[in-house]
Image 1 (cartoon, one colour):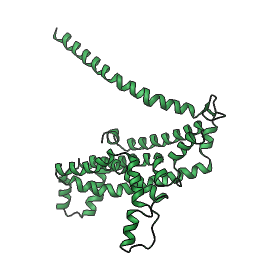
Image 2 (tube, rainbow, N blue to C red):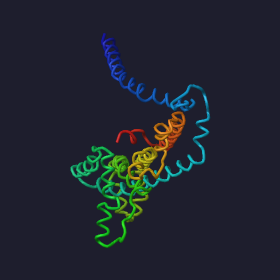
Image 3 (cartoon, rainbow, N blue to C red):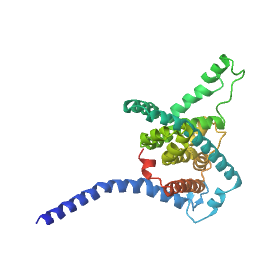
Length: 293
């Protein structure tokens, strides 16, 4: 009798769990899977006479994707994304090491100071950087006033401005995975190495960095991938002079109205994303480090 009751309870629990996850599956299918399938199918179609999509199978879009002029844009995009990732890592790593050594209350304050600005619209914050960095902006005027420069420096409307904007917008996505990894470090390991006479450089390179490598790799992925597609950053701080993959995709849909080609480039960008995530998982990383920070 007791076993029958237990079996009924297990069935009711499993039924409740199944019922509770149905909305999640529906949401994922309706707003992720189906749009992705639509974009994938569109990439094999033809451009309409007046733009849009015309039914018919064609591989021409994927041959155009790898044309010389597009490869140059991909190269520039990857270069800017790599520079952004490297700068974010150089800023976030020492900052996160500094934060995790503080008390829990102080940690919370520092993390809140980093997160709160991200509650403001990205474009508003980017236009604030335009005000600061333009030729007549606060930064140039200050440098001229203290005598460091004679003429205003071109901080924006070039690749430098794009990298500054990317770093500003994506720094949080490097800090959070690093914080998640460093918070799990056992202080006893560092103390033991220090007691045994290890130098700070060796403690960093042989203990701290290897143990936080999953967070480093997760942060690099979370910065590198969006940096390829943030077209509004290059539009705002690059002045439209720096074309990136995101700009190329946007222009194909909005300007050239070549939706199949834009879809094909989108699929290439998605393939790069999946490849990086696959490499991360093979190196022993967890998806929780990417999505659970």
